Image (spheres, rainbow, N blue to C red):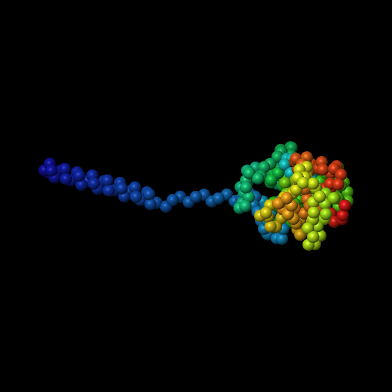
Length: 280
């Protein structure tokens, strides 16, 4: 074969080879992508099944509960061992459902290798008689057990005081959702009907900060033993102050942490029980 013909044949072979390589590359690029692994099912989520509003449930839909005797953030359970009717809930690294934040969950060591999960500082429990998903049979038990929700108003208990409206020592009294004790002042004018309450705490009343209602909050979340209509508000100092059964509600400045009730020893100031209905 003539030299120029040989060069032509070699050149054509090289072009064909490069074309073939390019086709292979395109075939690889156009290949279907490997499907992503399915997202892990949440180990704790919110359920709005039933009449109690959005509440925490586990991966199987079983309800989780708070105990009013627990102190928020204390990393301890006040349910005396073995607490058989209220088994602990635990999850080490929760995968959370829509509307929840993983950093709101933690856990603490109860001893003996047993751990308990918390949500926003509160220990979480099951109710032993809730055998089916969605059951809420433990709700309101003893006025101390409630499904785990993002409460605005909740309860605490102290063996050292009997709150106004309580019938025995260690009776539950009102707190904010974060666990800070709430107080009423017996020199205030109680609201009734269309008549707004009046605060007699001398402004700026710094020792007794008012419990402020967020302007965007339209429907406060309360335990089932509280009548939601009993928690209202009125405008004071340019802010909305929460009111319970006509009484303006305050914190005590010295109560810096959940579980503290130092204001109970101050004359004319009262922690209120959830069943409070009388006058001071």
